[in-house]
Image 1: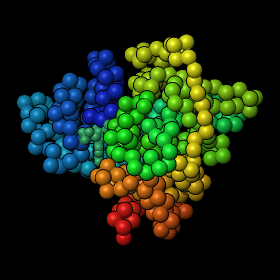
Image 2 (image 1 turned 120 degrees about the vertical axis):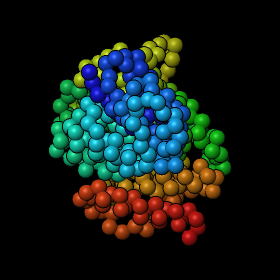
Image 3 (image 1 turned 180 degrees about the vertical axis):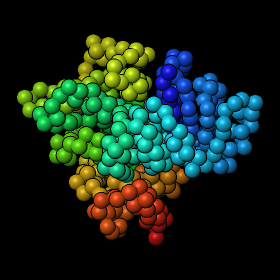
Image 4 (image 1 turned 90 degrees about the horizontal axis):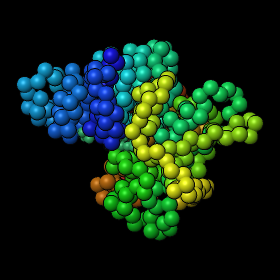
Amino acid sequence: MRSISIFGATGSIGESTFDLVMRAPETYRTVALTGGRNIARLAEMAIALRAELAVTAYDDCLPALREALAGTKIEVAGGEAAIAEAADRPADWVMSGIVGAAGLVPGMRALRHGGTLALANKESLVTAGPLLMETARAHGATILPVDSEHSAVFQALTGEDAACVERVIITASGGPFRNWSAERIANATLAEAVAHPSWSMGQRISIDSASMFNKALELIETREYFGISPDKIEVLVHPQSIVHALVGFCDGGIMAHLGPADMRHAIGFALHWPGRGDVPVERLNLAQIGKLEFQDPDIAKFPALRIARDVMEARGLHGAAFNAAKEIALDHFIAGSLAFPRMAAIVEETLSRMNGLGRTAANLDDVLEVDASARRVATSIAGGR
Ligand code: NDP
Ligand code: MG
């Protein structure tokens, strides 16, 4: 029986993971499930999977979790440290599905057991790519990408000679503002930004898709996970979200990965790897879809892509500052105190105000320090100081 833990169980990725696991619950032993404020759902999932431990990220939610699980044998805990401690409990397969930089520490700690980390939390690679990959190597752990584009690249690369890879192309739906003018984007509301045309995802990644900060993070993620130089990584806008990535080889051939816009494919791939198992996603009917369109992204309208290129080249601690500033800018947009295009401006200004980002992170503390100071800088810029 395989032991599993799901970090971010109550989120969009967590729900999809839960759905797959619940189709064959007798084959898994659930070590830990973690969530945030959605205590009712966390408790329900913990009971359904007979988890050993359920953790909320927030201390103030712990009494409610304790009450919801009273009378069961499930242990409960709360707070950031408790989430990290949950990752210290060995599991063969761990889903890293927390949103934001908060996913970094638990993912890093889980790698120390040498199992498989199914990595949806792209922020881990953006903020601390080299440390994460090195930790996996040092402990004999496997990181499998769950982001759909990166799962697609991984699948297209299987059995191939990395030296023959000429280019990696990740696709982007273009988000809800693909055909909007810059003037219209300037006044975009939260509801408009969250309304993703092809994927159903958490609120934060949906807005990041509208600003293309999601694709910006994914460029960096591609660079860090596959070790491919930035000049070989491209973004292609593909509104149908059917082709998730393409890999071009030195003989001119291109391997494309196609699938429905359903994260259960990439999660299922990571769950069944190195083999393949049945995954209950819709089967594509290409004749019905009819046409697949591709176009270059509009960098002027979506400056996040340009900023990401600089971060990819510069590496060091730039990714940690970039992500932290983006998270703060996003908080302000969600709170209604920032216009949509100001998010990119805040990220760019934060990076330009910070010194010493070129150095390589020696350890996790270096990354967490830069994350904290970038949050302070971005907060003061957003507040007009
Ligand atoms: P959601 O917002 O739907 O879920 C986030 C999860 O993390 C929830 O369980 C939430 O708890 C929990 N959480 C929130 N804040 C914290 C915190 N500070 N500490 C610990 N846990 C916390 O996000 P998604 O599922 O959409 O995304 C998760 C990750 O996967 C992100 O990194 C995203 O970029 C990546 N990803 C997502 C895709 C998708 O389709 N959704 C596709 C590709 C990548 P609660 O809800 O209970 O408060
Ligand atoms: Mg993606």
